[in-house]
Length: 129
Image (cartoon, rainbow, N blue to C red):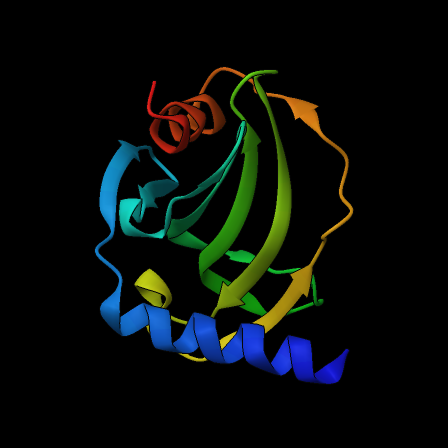
């Protein structure tokens, strides 16, 4: 379990430098990016990395700490129009360049209908719609 978490963290750190983040949505409080090179498709399922660059820092899950960027991996069911969160990491610098504040994996998270907005944009990109 610890080895898997360490591997995931190393992948996240290494992917920061090589990622080709594509801006897909801008907002007052955040900009949303995807890395199309990370799309992995298996049958009706697709996975993709996303990044939320936070315009004004928000409190992360830990009390008093700030996060400036959030990277996550979502899995999309292209046929059923659903998504679920698999992994998320909070960073202490913009664009996920700084060190990881903390991370969490959710391999058994529940599938949810894709809501209009950023999740639907990402679903369309990951599923090639």
